[in-house]
Length: 60
Image (cartoon, rainbow, N blue to C red; front, side, top):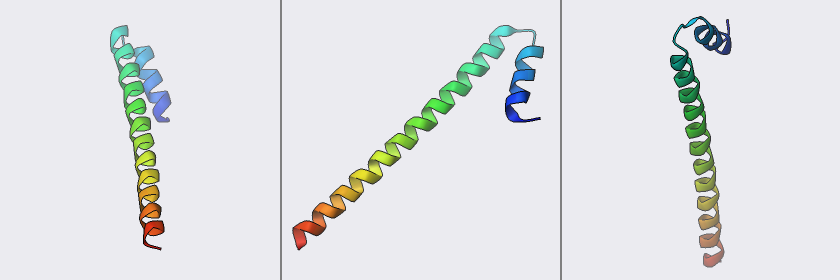
């Protein structure tokens, strides 16, 4: 069983629906935070490259 199937099975078989909703919301939140961190890291790398190139051009 894949992770998605396990989560789906847990939500379907669990009697308390709010637990399933909370589980889905928490997974969505984790994915959003992961995407946000990746975006910040990408921006940070671009900024570092830009600063490095500016310093290099200034020295030449």
